[in-house]
Length: 140
Image (cartoon, rainbow, N blue to C red; front, top):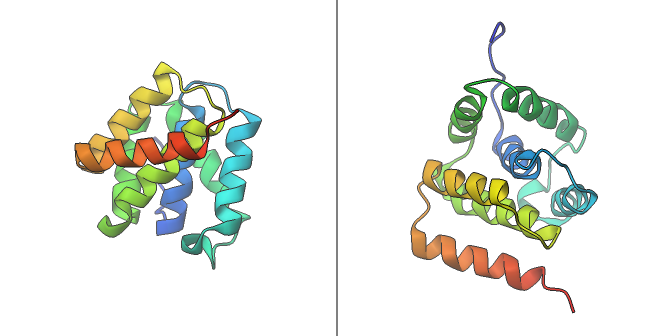
């Protein structure tokens, strides 16, 4: 990497996690983008967030995902920018993005597993978060 990585605000870090899950299967689905937009528009944690930053954060994620050690760098940025009290929030948002297109594939599951490990999310808490995401995104 030639230039230093930008630091991420807590909200930027949450966006980065959601984008990373979305691009983990190399396909960004409309449902996933709409889910991210909906969460940014409605959740209190994004209350004072400048939505124009989404594009900048997403581009940072795309760039890092193309590099050999990019995922490690991304997780480092997320850990540096995200207070520990928001780790479960980040995981919940990531799960909601993965579940938003109804079909969660292996690449997304691996990304969620790595994220769970990187953010030190307890297995029982993770299972509850995952179940909540599945329940919210069920279809008839």
